[in-house]
Image 1 (cartoon, rainbow, N blue to C red):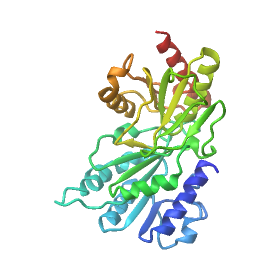
Image 2: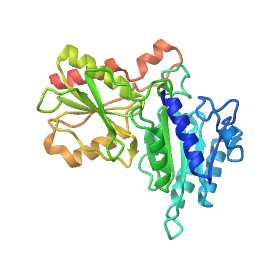
Image 3: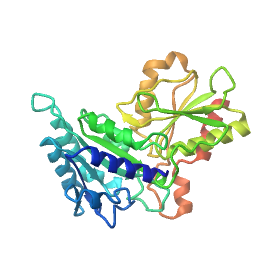
Image 4: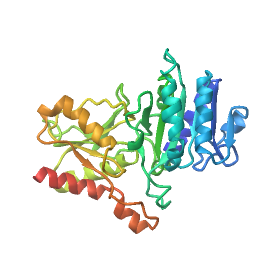
Length: 327
């Protein structure tokens, strides 16, 4: 099953099990089924609860927050995550604040889905990864679709938090199979925090040379780098793929080197938050500060050959790790 199919099946299951759940967004109804077909079939099964809206990210997010405030559940789809900035006020000043600013904690069961990321030639304003702009807001949890965790569990967990959640969906994942890991690496199922682990089958003993932490669509690029580092440099890596970005939690394997990969640009990022958490808990175990790997400081071009130069790639990850470990 591909990631898009898994996400679509998860939404069907959640709509079936949750009679007060509404899904709204631009062109989410059949026969279009959303820009990336993630909502295909939902409006035919649940016509009273799947509603297509005009191009209005601020309004549709506000409607979702209003439904949640009234005791219902809501999922809002932003057609391209870049335009979640238009819904920033509704998320930060209304939805997230409503959880606690009325005296008692108020359940706010709402999810805002945001397709993000480049690699598909959509250009500067339809290819960004804006996760860092939503970090650290009290009452707002951030998740990212993982190729290694069933989205049914992710969506159920998000609604169970009873606070607004943003789900980032890297567009390059939609056509990828779930849980695809080639030998000699093996996948361990997600732990209690939703973190999946990919490591060398059997291992060489004594723990990996380094740990990579990569979410969403960067996970497969990290896996490609792990393979070339093993074959060409004899460097053994373990990959951690989180499902929940914020609040962040991690059980770090026995290693002295940690790298965090993210597709967004450097500066005030999720990776910096991860580095801070690891520094607080594990600094005495590490040989050096956590190393962050980002895309270039640039807008994202439309032309494929220029886009490849900007976005973080497997070769970039390989080079940073090889240069860092060789000192």
